[in-house]
Image (cartoon, rainbow, N blue to C red):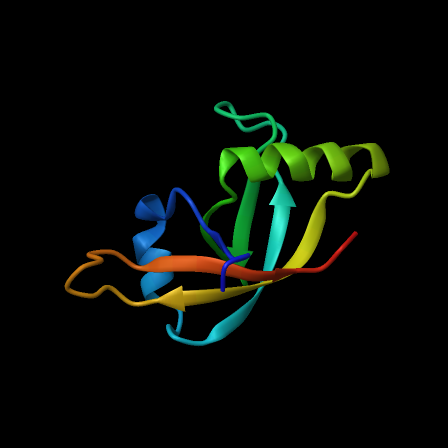
Amino acid sequence: MSNAIWVTGRQFYQEALGELRCEVEHDALLVREPTNPYDSNAVVVMVGQHKIGYLPREKAEKLAAILDPKGVTQLTAKVQLFAPTYNRKQFAAQLTAITAP
């Protein structure tokens, strides 16, 4: 899917990703994290209680500019998880749909 967005920072959340079923689509929440010390536009990706990574910085910046003026702090999304392979040594996650605010 060409419009899909790869979740970043997932290397820090491999344990959480390993607890989730791969190769299926999951419901996810995209949650604004304006107090993030590294990026005030940060948007974290949650599957249930599992933090699995963040939106890429440039996508988060655009989304924050839309959400913040409306007072919206989270959106629902769909995320596809992928198990490690020979070429990809870690779990990976790709957003496949985001529900408009």
